[in-house]
Length: 328
Ligand code: SIN
Image (cartoon, rainbow, N blue to C red; front, side, top):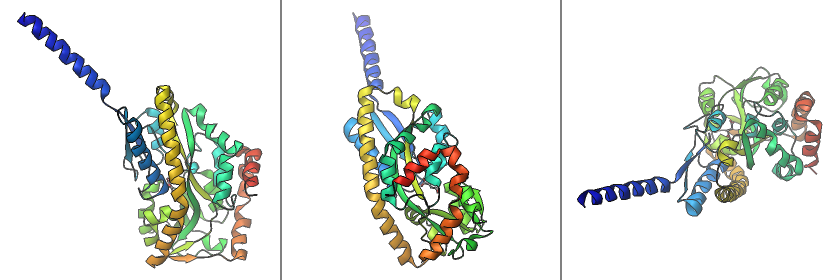
């Protein structure tokens, strides 16, 4: 009888342990390279909170900001290997997987963020989310950061001011061509290295959004920022087909909805951050903000715009046309 009791207890214990093991929520890792007080940082935290609220018994989202887990170049590989489940890289960092997204790097393509948004929501823009599908990646949506500015050790008013200067760029051949067009020297470097490269004067300048220039303190080591608005830095929230398609349908639906709401949250704060971070930089007195006259800006446009035709075949003329049309 005692033996039977012991056996039954052991069975009950095992069953309990199995139930407990099944009940443990699955960890979803969201890795990114920027600070938490940015549109992407805030979007990821919102996603973590919504998942906890709606399906927290099954999934827990861990957010790793500031290249803590993986930096540029490594995060996509890590995603494909299943080490992380979500990333939101800059659209400039996908050229290994698709050439079509290079459209977003063409200089002076979009007149403002409303035009960027119109293009992203258009049929052509939405189709680009699918352009990485054959590589095992799922583009779940666009997230805004904003337009890019040029920062440097010396004032940049006209293209010849950039002559011979070294600029850090993201891993994009279009961005390399853009700086080569003004006879500058582009260097592809990870985001996590930019501050030190600037501080040690290993490079002369870089291009980025107000939010990244502020949150990563680039303005403290760059005495001049030219408000050029010459290009866009936005993101594609991305997961892997392997992770996404093996989720139960109902869970995927909940996660997708939470993600869409988090992206909307990030997009809603992106515009405000532009104004707020620009103001904080101005008030810091560490960096002079240079406003270009129309004639000066036109010089940059004229020198950089020929880059479009260099990449037209890789990107597709119809995609460039659709992007141009979004300016109307
Ligand atoms: C980011 O905003 O994710 C990084 C941008 C950069 O690499 O400059």
